[in-house]
Length: 308
Image (cartoon, rainbow, N blue to C red):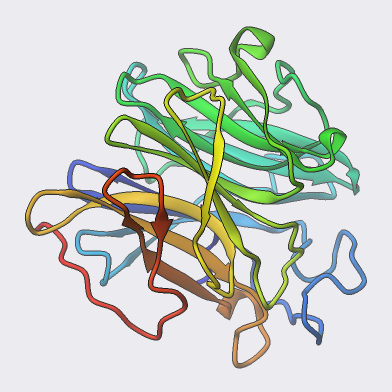
């Protein structure tokens, strides 16, 4: 499955995996995929698109096809990354944010597209989100709280890849800027953040800067009692040989909410095609007080129960 930079959500018992598809480009040899970094190189091509995969059991997946593409929607020489899609319970729209660059990393933006159905096609609504407190956008993710409020967690090149969170506008097409900003929530440089809520506690997790690195990066977890923080550093998820892409919730056979880490295992494809790089999945384990979060590490297989 050509599924990367992804986000997975559950709607009405169906799991929807929105992912960037990179195509059958040949990865450069070595420990990372960023040799000769530049537009047009493998991982930085201008034909990236967003594919939807669906499942009812997290095992068998159906490819629903391309729901959004860089070509035809973004300016020439644009490279799309990190499509993050959520459902807005107020507008009943599926809202997709994505990061993209035009010509070089010095021109980095967030775009927003929407669709009334998960299968799309998604239509561009905002070509450049201008309400952000920090510029030069990097990796991002979205989180929708139990009250329907949306949040953007993102890295900024102007902050040296540090993390910040901003509350979204009710339509999820922009942010509330300084009025809804956390400021810097995690100071070590990093990327590929994820945000979720469990038992009234808010969690963020992210890794070190890792440009398509084959070895992956350590994933650090922070917690807070409010979505905008302040956040406290807690634990590491261990060696997962991957770059984080999301942490999603699922319902187990007993009806309880559980959480799963997913990350991109770059440089792992047997044939060297980026489209064939594997995805790492790891169920999260929580201490009684919720402050310690771990996984079983990098495993060839594991078993979880999923609600039918």
